[in-house]
Image 1 (cartoon, rainbow, N blue to C red):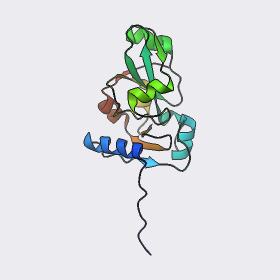
Image 2: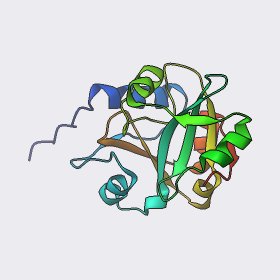
Image 3: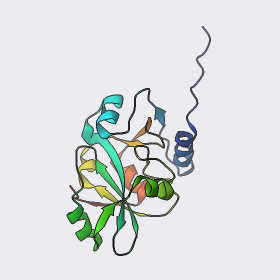
Image 4: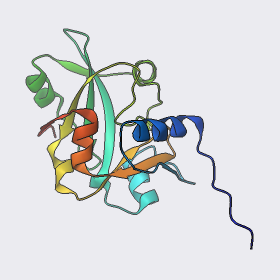
Length: 163
């Protein structure tokens, strides 16, 4: 039997893998046959609970124009009023074009690190209830498994209740 060749990652997924390694994380980006674009799709693809999926959402401050990375459990929805109170300004979800320009990735593939611009990160406290979680890795078909503690370390995110 010949050894099987490792499947090469798509460019955006490889970029995330390289960033993980350069920042000292040994997590492995995996690409799936089926889409991981939505939390439900990702949970089905990796065989975990929907709550273990990290949704990387980009919000903009309506007053300051600041960009915020909001990392939410796949089982939850962001309470925008609660988020606005925490940030001391009203917020709105960024559109797909802005997300791509700010992060370098398309919606459904936005990882929790390696964005084009610096942004404050907010982490849904419900993610801390899991031993392992899964985050997008550059494309709507790529993910990587990590711990909630490492999510906090890689994003310098503030943990709050936002759902």
